[in-house]
Structures are given as structure tokens and as C-alpha cells.
Length: 97
Image 1: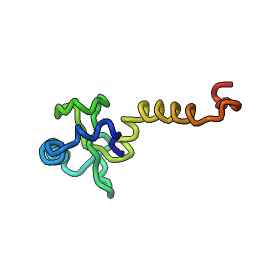
Image 2: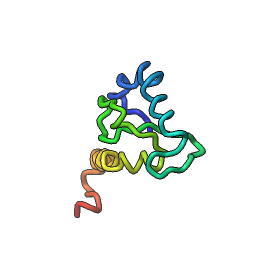
Image 3: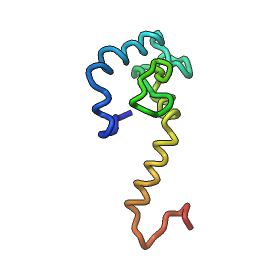
């Protein structure tokens, strides 16, 4: 998943060279949730959805499908807000009738 601009400073040198490789080495190339070996590689997800919390117990090496499932509630809320902000004011969203 792309990194939100406000969180980019949190993913610097230490993240790339120490934290992320340590989590990826722990998993042995398999997703820690569904246990598949993804073709496209693994993401490292914050399980509590709090990027400043880099405790190893809070991080998991996951496939992109599992990463999306972990972050779905945050993603869905942002998507709703974006749709609401861009929607024509004269025509309400279908869910808001």
C-alpha cells in the first residue's frame, strides 16, 4: 500500500535497513496471516494501524491481500470522506437517502 504523505517521515533509514528486514526475516517468505508465499513479495503492516509504533509484536509480514484486510476500516472511512467531499451537493450519495 502506498504510504500516506503525513507518515513518510516515519519510514526512513531505520525502517528500511533495520525494522522491515527484521520482520521479513522472521516470516521466512510466507504471509504471517494466510501462510502463502506471494509472487509479488510481502508488505510489513502495523497491526494496530499506528505507524509510529514499530514494536516487533505490532508488525507483521503480510501479502497485499491480507494487508488490505488489516487496513480496510481506515481505507473505507477515507474513501467515504473522499466521495462525500467530491459529490455534487445537489445529488446526495445513495447510502444517505
